[in-house]
Every structure is written in structure tokens, then in C-alpha cells.
Amino acid sequence: MIQGSPLYGTASLSFMDSSSLVRIDDTIERVEVVQGGTSAIFSSGQPGASANFILRTGSDKTTGSVAATYGFEGMERIDAFYAG
Image 1 (spheres, rainbow, N blue to C red):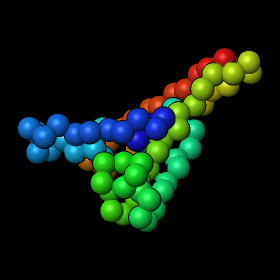
Image 2: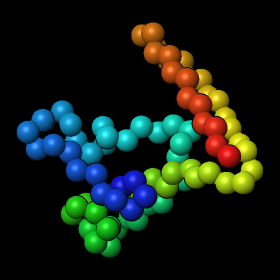
Image 3: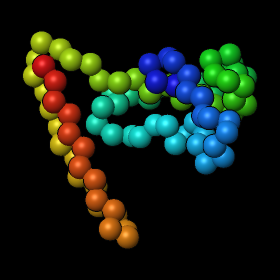
């Protein structure tokens, strides 16, 4: 879920499940996880756990961050966040 709204993958695309709809980057403030029996109440029938990604919001104070990720096979990624 993002901000409490569930994500549903497309049934017609076998490669597009709910986990491919979220990218962990600097726009996420925190993650709230409900594990166990009550997770089916907050999500679409998840027996194990449901994760809710809470996004960063702007404030009176100007903040920002930059992150770089390097990996195998030429993976390079730069994430930036700036708000105020």
C-alpha cells in the first residue's frame, strides 16, 4: 500500500504483480508493516504481511537528500529529494 491505498497488479500481465509497482527511494519516509491474521483486513487477502509505504511530505523547513546506487551489470541510479 502507498499512504493506505492498496496497489493491485494487472491480471492480464503475468509479470506485473504488486511488488513491481513500488520502488524504494528517497521519497519514502517510513514503512509500516502489519503481520499476521489482521493483515487480510488492510490488504487484498495477504496471509503473511501487508506493508504500507508512507511518503515524505513538505514542511516549512527546506530539506533535501541525494543518494547514488551502483551495482552489477552496469546498474546505476541516482535518487534526489528536495522539499520545502
